[in-house]
Picture 1 (cartoon, rainbow, N blue to C red):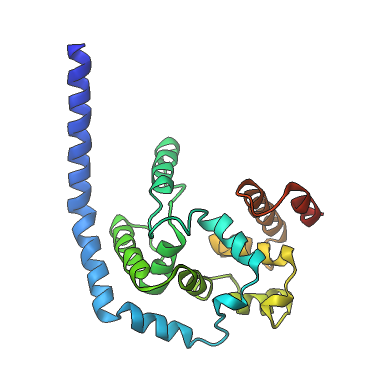
Picture 2 (cartoon, rainbow, N blue to C red; picture 1 turned 90 degrees about the horizontal axis):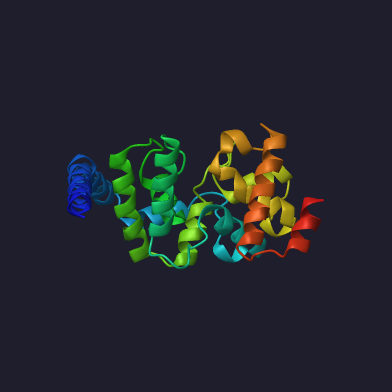
Length: 234
């Protein structure tokens, strides 16, 4: 029993040391990166400039199927968390450790928005910390639906399309989002995860596989019934 207690103490101390080291290495530089970005362009100013973009779509213009598909594909607890999904973070850390490489990020839609509009796509601990701070700032200044609206207007869909309306027109030759079929809505929702891979013009078969994956998630999370999914897959 004494040996077990000593081992527990050693493990706790090791976790504290690792955590402290991580804060020193990534926390302070990440916080400074966030502060510098925010001082350069406050959230209100950044949001206003995004809404002036050509082909910007408001939340009311987004088909319900598309909204549900985005949430299922990217952040199923979007309306429940305050910018950070700690359950997803823990799951991502576990999967990364098990795979011994970076395979899952655990980023919420709010974090991805922060990355899209303030930071680069570079994978680094410092940027990740900055992204977390900025996500909290976005949640403080924007309503949930507005965050989702901003996300789909700043995500990259491949082929030079940086808004959902651009992608709708480019891939499906439809000028209005409301003209998309349910299958097309789900297809667009799956592309930003890896646009160079899932863009319909690049890898049609991989696009179909990704769409099927999103449909399965929508069934799992209650956005579709199985019979509805079966019809879409046909």
